[in-house]
Structure formats: structure tokens, C-alpha cells
Length: 281
Image (cartoon, rainbow, N blue to C red):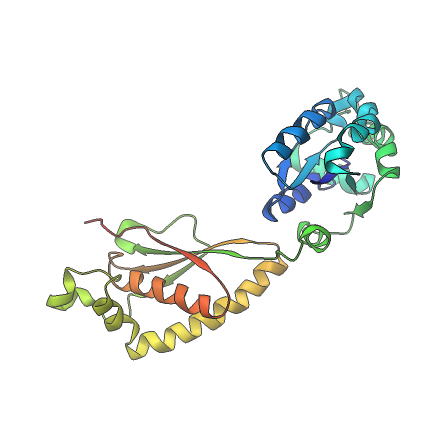
């Protein structure tokens, strides 16, 4: 098992780092009491989990002193864990914590800066043992994610694409990152022998997709989305939903969603297709 310990200062970006690991396919556990680490590793090993990231920090207080001995206990399964330490300057942490209006774990009733300094002292041993220290003082969360991906991504900088057809008459999909309106295309609803069919039928699909407007539009849409896909990866956005809408979500949007998925597959971008309103009246 590969085991990565994510630790560091509150407000420095531990949770963002953990989210990135999760997006890369790692099994992530946040705020685990250190004493539970051997049991967790043993259980997940029995479940054939091969990549585990655990967030350990000062919320565990006195349990931190157990960590060297715990690492020895899990060595037969996980070897020597790699430690990623996330830190930032006191001034930046103060600014971030004041923005979120949350105290740091060791602050108590005292000043925020006093709590930050106490935390820094408590986890200094972990910092000294770290395999990688990332100072986020001058980093955005996207730059932090890029650092994590570069080391632990194992080449899996993939984009998970969902293409959703829908009908405008039933409302916009709230979870869409991009909405495309194809109501300008020829409507099979007005063709008597096509009206009862859906965009999944070959006849409707050919009627919609082979129209000159659709051919030109699909070329542009694929090119635009491929450019966007590269940008999404740079910005560490790995889950994308593209919604294609027509009036009722039965003919044009369905056919175009299927065609877009097919075209993206041809250029190496697999997509899942969902027809939200197919079957509705």
C-alpha cells in the first residue's frame, strides 16, 4: 500500500491537498486519530485499497507523539509513509482564518496569532520528517493542486465528463458547468413520422445531426470543448458537466448529446451521457 500523510498548519491548505488526492483516486481519511492508523491500514489492505492518504494534524493533540511508533507498526503493509507538510506564513494564515471566521485548533480564548505559533511548535517534529514541504504563502489553491498532482498523480490527469441532454421547458440543470442551446436546429417534432421517436433513434439522429447547421456547430463545439478541457485540467477542475438543451429534451438535445460523446471519444475524451428529460411528457 502507498501511504501519504498530509499534515501541516491550519489554514495552509491541508484540506485542498486532500481533495486533490481524492480526485486522483486515492482513498482519503481526514482528521484520523493517530492511534487508529494501524487498524485503518490493516482493514483497507484487506479491502485491497492500494493508495491511502491520511490527514493528521494538531486536532489530535497529544496523540502526535505516538506517530513514530505507529509508523513502525504499519511498515509491513505500507512501508515508510511519505509525509507532505503544508505550511504558510503567520500573516497569510491570519488573513485566511479571519476571512473564514474560524479559530485555529490551539487558539482557545487567546489571540489567533498565539494559537498559530503554538500549533507550529507542536508539529515541528512532523515538519522535520517531511518528504515534501509546500509553502502556500504565495500559491493559489490551483497551484497547490498542481504540485500535488505532479508528485502523486501517477499520470492520471484525467477529466471526468458528463454530457446531459435536457428540455428548457423543464428548467435549466443546476449542476451544469456549460449550457448549450440547440433549439436553432431543425425540430423533428414537426415531422409526423419522427415525432413519436426520440433522439436515440437512427432516423431522428440522422435528421438532426446531419443537418448543415448541426455539422458546422458540432465541429465548433468539439474544438471549443477540447480547448476548455485543457484549461480545466490546468485549473484542477476534473469533473465537468456539459448540458445540451432543446425545447422538450426528447429529440435535438438527445441526438446532439450522443453525437458529442461520440466525437469526443474519437479524440480520446470519454464521456458519460445522461438524458435528464427523456420519457417526460
